[in-house]
Length: 439
View 1 (cartoon, rainbow, N blue to C red):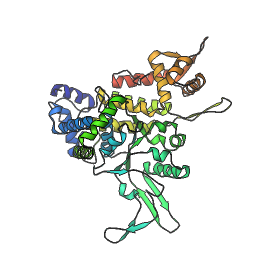
View 2: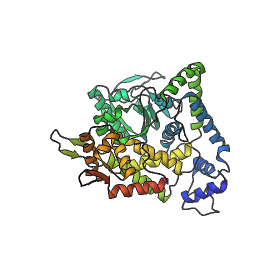
View 3: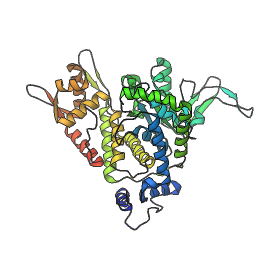
View 4: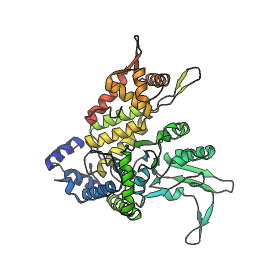
């Protein structure tokens, strides 16, 4: 990328600047991180920047170890994981994201790559007593100290290798954990015990977690805590090639290779100081992020059908929380990738947004967006559900005003005015086909 091309993008992204005016103006970039942001955006050739060279070295080692999907987006899962840690260094609300894929499909290894970074904390399991124990223990200096983990996690990103075990755990314990996490996300947690001991915590904690697709079946999670998480679904790879790569890993030296990957990720992430300044967003990107947030907020709203076929649809959440989360993702992703906020970063954000919607609903919406209108029978083939269950999903989306039902001999479903407007704003921001979900 030439300096002229980069500068052209800079003026679009920083509307308060004029050609010839310093990118390092105090009102635009502050501190070392601001200079880093500007340096990455005005480099004559970003690939020659030492920071970008470190990213390429990390990617190459990561791709040599794990089998990734083909194409230009093959490193997205690594970039997203790195971006979560960088995003939680911003002075803002926390970012909680889950990497979703079946067992033995690289999500745990992707998370472990980041486990030696100073502001991360790796957890294999969580109980109701892990964060707030109510007990004291002897510290290194011989003095009594609180055994609760929560005070030690302030301003860190917690890495859960397997959140699935929490989702499938004993119901009472699981609900207590969900209640704790809900308060922690909001920045404050208070607990008192009968012994007179109290824990009064305020702070911020980020989360990067791995989970299997069972997350889509967890009504308790989605109703109690799901609104605080966004999702990225790791693309599937060829199973035969995956098996072959597993054998190759044994010859590469598994422990030594994993250690080298952790060291490379730690070295790279140390380049991003904290707190991180906010990168400006252009008007078209801001509108696109808002449309994505509104779309996801509506599309993931719960619906319930009684045994008599009566439908109850919850009130959709507001888009504010998702807008902030998506803003963090795209800013951090651009920093991690050593590139301005552009079509590529917006495409990844769009995929995160679509992945956050229940898969069946997103498949149906993508089908309607692609073809304009569909019948229940056609939709059922894509959703791999019965006609009656598919029709229930379509009715719920119509109740949420994303679809409209068309009359005639065969009932058809088409885009609502609201869905058309949202997709137009998303497409303008990404300059790409909004129906990226494979149908």
